[in-house]
Amino acid sequence: MTVASPRPRPARQGLTDFTLSVRREDVEEIASAAADPEWLRADRLAGFDAFEALPAETNLLYTTYIDLRAAQLSATQLVHSPRTESGVIPLPDGADGLLVLTEGDLTGAVLSDEAAAAGVTFTTIADLAARRPDRLRELIDGSGSLPADDKFAQLTRALWTQGVVLDVPAGVRLARPIIVRWAVGAPDRALLSRTLIALGDGAQASILEELVASDTAVPTNARQSFLAGTLEVTLGREARLEIASLQELPQTTVAFQHRNAVIGEGATLHWALAQLGSRLVRSRVDNRLEGDRSSVEQVEIVFGGADQLFDLTSYTRHLGRDTTGNLLSKGALMDKARSYMKGMIVIDRSAVGTDSFLGEFGMNLSKATRSVAIPSLEIDQPDCRRAAHASSVGPIDESQLFYLESRGIPPDEARKFIVMGFLEPVVARVPVAEARDRLRDLLEETWQAGIGTGTVAAA
Image (cartoon, rainbow, N blue to C red; front, side):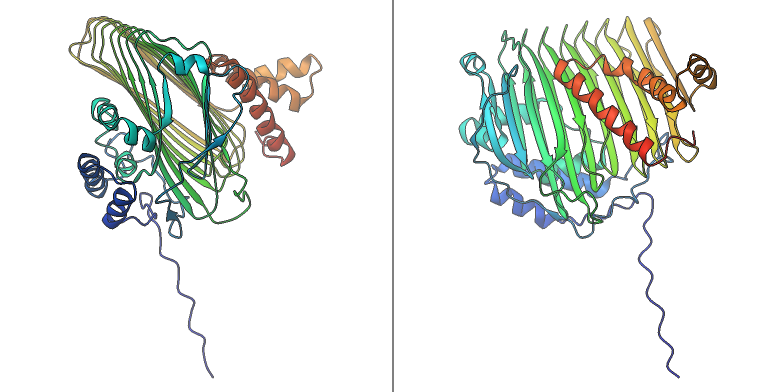
């Protein structure tokens, strides 16, 4: 009698194991394909060395809250050389520019005549490297770029193949938003990208970043795609920038995002970030308030279901005098979704007169969901106007539900009102009107999907 040998078990994946296969040779091939100058090639290699040396999480407060097991990327292949030639597309009403990148390829680009006449540069990194290589080096070397202690930021630094540049000269004020649209999600593709944003002294702009599914994405396919993207911001004296980012990628996509900002004297930055799609999101925001009287406002919203995981971290470092930080994160989860909201405010010795607040709040709409909120303060300067944090996690308030139902509102409608009301303070602070309306529509769609599958009823 012949006994069949047991089937081999798949290799067990640890919480911090990252399964995307990358090699030093990939860095060399990407640098050669892009004809990188020597300084940029060296920068890539330094990033790869840091990626190999760093652990998945360096902050001991957060090492318990990392889980990369949902990222099944062993069959995923790097995009080495995307196309950069684009077609002519119409300028959207109410916008000053639009750049469309589909699976890494530049498929459309347009800039208003007014913005072009004012000297605004809105193009790909490859185009800027060909026309103004010295300016590209200034943007990458001078921005403080990406966090040196983050393994996956350094991966993007090493292996990015597509990038966007928005360079607004001093004194130029754009009245209408600039739109950057990334359409991705094709199975077994890994795209790493960088976006460089610089505003000169007194400049003003607003940006809408859209992360959407491409036509080749297969939402029900078990094969995953990978997107790692950055937003690297440098603000000059008295500059003002508003950024709204709507992430509605398919749930077969793994998304790693890094946003880094260096904020100059008297400058103001507003972030409004919405996380709705993807199987696994790992997001990190770093704000450096270097200039006196600089300020940052950051709002982030999470609304997810199924088995999505949202891993969100923010670091805000106050260095200048009389700086202001106001950070708010809110998440509502259905089914078996999980969220980790982690934030750190650091007030350096030089940061006299700081006013900083960090709030993180989670609402669990199912008994199987899990929300974690870890706001933290590190204060080395006692002379502060304010240094505070707050957090809470829990289900829908039964007293609120009772109040609405007692007024004749059906239970599902009552829950919807409470959830949307919980998220609305964040939605209302999205700086671009079109993005606010779009976000409200997306939240409605997510809610209806949760009701349809019965994942809210168990709350």
